Image (cartoon, rainbow, N blue to C red; front, top):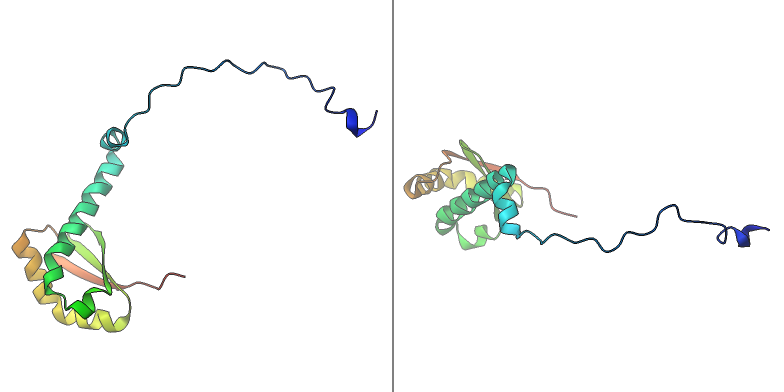
Length: 120
């Protein structure tokens, strides 16, 4: 017989099921609203964006392009910077930036600065 006849002898054990009724898709917004971890993540992202909007006016334009908003928690907020020189300048501006956060009523009390490695 050989290998050429191997496919002729295959007999499926079960017949393919008829097209089953597919349930209606649930809108993504509803799924996100029901998922507690994703809700917390959305809240943290919204807080980080609010923090960035509060300090953006206090960042020199040449410096602002090298600063990104990082993670936030109840105590602190992290700014991600492109290089150590930007981090050094931001550390000089920290009192002004933290005051801006307090004036805007943001939850973070302190700002951390982290140099982020360049993406490859």
